[in-house]
Length: 306
Length: 306
Image (cartoon, rainbow over all chains, first blue to last red; front, side):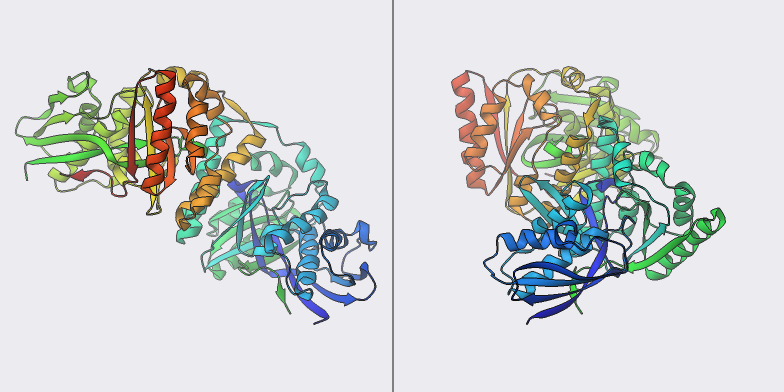
């Protein structure tokens, strides 16, 4: 096999009480990529459709992630990469992670799978370092493992796949405004109250238990964030109205996707997820903000061949 | 049935990364109680063996917890309670919780189980309020539910039972020193760094996942506490040596039980738990501190009839 065409899922990171540790992969939104073995060494981004992003290998997240893999591989050829972006850059649903993970996953397939999924996470994190200055795994881990993933530790890297109930759906609304990741990081406080911390780890424990037992009500009760959401939501116009609407339409919980501006809600069943989406749309229509809405089942397998 | 004799398990609360939310019940250490229906209204502590504790109903945790139940019951008689303490007061393994929960569990049995386990937790919390000034559920929840329990929230009270792997054993060493709960609470800081918070909820998520999947290695990796243990361990002589020894003997993890002074370790298998106990003993023998050691399987059913 010399060429592979793949789907790279969008992902939600910073899931409410799971700030900086819990992410999930989506099923109906993602990029496509074509990766091809070449005799010429190195990596070239030969096509980049759908978004204005750098095509120079060292400035492209897929390029940089791929180079990290190549650096420890004994393969003496190279790769051409075509990227068909459907996830908007800066939307907060793992646009850079989709490209980084797609590149290394496809390369690994074409080389006969010499690397483990955890190793691929590490390579893809180099793409995240380029995109945001921080080599985080919040989005690349779920994109590669599928489903929910908990990044328990970075030293050493410890990624724990968490199961997801069959009827769990995500609704994501992306208001077409720009929130700089650096801004949304800057406004976070470096200390929190012990009291809020206790609530947060209680909720995270409840959320993980709810995901293991398919207890939708428990998942809903646990989707609380007393620490980051109250601060970051200020940067997202209409956040409170969107959340109130989502909950009134039957969502289990609602929060900021990644560092925003996208907002996600989880629901039991597609029908509720659709209702939540319609309610969210109405809020932004009234305010007069353009948006995209995505409804998706949880993607439990991660990147897939097309 | 007019009389019941029961076993009330000791419990470990504040399990490392689960500070204030995660507790577990033990199997081989606990109190015994006899509870008897009487025509006379109210509650009387008619016997209290093994510890010097108040016998006046309003000053005894079992009495106060029982009164909380009676206050909402339509039963128009009363109860006599005999308490045979085997758990030392102030040891940090839920001495007061054993008495509080035992009283309300036995009364509920004798009345034909009008109350749910969660309601019993609420009654027993009144005993904890008397004992420590705070109506916490860290110990009473695992004593009543058995196994591991996560207290996700107090408003409203939300207790999540978490499964425990079959070969999980606890070793508990109780150095015969006094640490006042008020002191061990006073030295805690009211704020923590966001960075430590993230580690803590990552670990709690990992621990819950490890308990669900019987992944002993993950349980071990997750038994970390960067927040409370570094502060409270200062009050427990030899803590670092005990922990180092426990880990070197094969324990999965080791931490402070409750607010101390007892120290717990978890191990896979009874043999390892015994080795850990022997190692811990040797440390306190060298230092010249008296101690009790308990080795116990996890108690998965909570209080039981004898």
